[in-house]
Image (cartoon, rainbow over all chains, first blue to last red; front, side):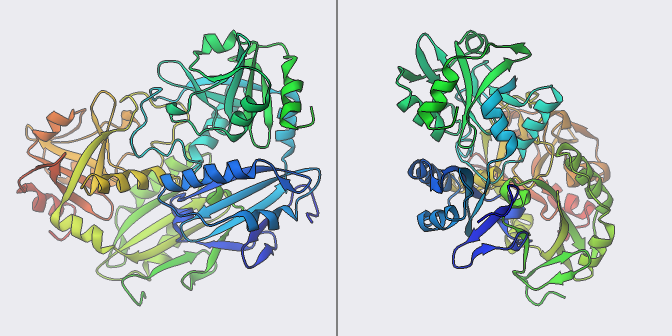
Length: 268
Length: 268
């Protein structure tokens, strides 16, 4: 069991939970020299990984894009989740070319705050066309090469925002660095088409399936998005975070936020 | 001293050379979870790091783009180079948010072969405009998030080529995943302008300075490049590798290759 909310335990097959800070990866391993690996982050509810099958399916797709052959991770996930703090926690599954392991930790307080209070989002062009990814692109893979995603979020902070919503050069909403975008317009719950090369969202797909609303994949410009009845960023740990400001313009709280969080099984 | 050509030694400040495979980075360190760090690769000649000052300057720029504060690495570089196999070897300097270290190894045989025999290159659009990088872009940083670079080279192999030359959506030559492009046209030695967001090449800049030819940064389309008197990929370890086939069309060996290798101090 985790001793403090800030602990993050690393669980390695055959070795169990390692003491905090235990070195695991060699200094010349491609996993650290080249961000050469894939991962998934899974929400854990009272020790049970949520949507684990869907996350493992996506991890297999990511691995395929990196020419990796992932092992079966179900036993490792179960072993890590047995150490999970209640009522909710964060499981991370990591697969590199030479090893695989899991981490288990509390959900970060900043994540809980964004679920509760929403986020201020600034839009910015990713510099690519909506259908212009190169053939080797890893944009649809959740790889360990995440430095640009973190840099985009640091940039958002310099703009007085919590997060970025990336747009295509034509101005269509794509995704956030660590989340998908979902919006309600014309009575339909919508998200970005997967053929734009975004990382397809496990949480977004589940939300569209269980919300009890008509649902579809759509391209939307930023003005179209701004006119929506509600906009949310969806990701495994946040569940959904309502966009309460878009490019500096405040948005009223949507009555749908609590209902959609409920549909996902998160505390509203 | 390295015992075999395939050894790669990891050198850590205060700990010296580690036995091969020694774990160094924790499984929850952002360096491995997010490719969150920067590096440089330096050619070492009889134990002396070549263009070390220029590489350290570029590492500092990379670190700034990732909001990292790099330490002084000169002592570490000297310590690692003392273990370098003669006559040439590869020094890698790595800086993460929590640590820094070096690796030293022989120059890979495949790299030596490309320097000697040249490379077959296929061009492919990177999907971005020549001046369309987003404000948080790390394209000009040599970060540990290198999975897409490796994926591009794997894709090149599926196209019967050794390497990719990335182009902008307008068709201008940008850079290769681990190299810059230099070409000779109209008596001028040319490379891609840094304001396209490429990683500015230490070897390319040095070559343009010492080749004894007029030199300049230019945008060139692929047909313009194909008409050049010579095309080379430049990088620290290869020095330069002549492009002997571009998009499947063979190119005659340039008499300049040996002269330019000589100007860089590499064995021709």
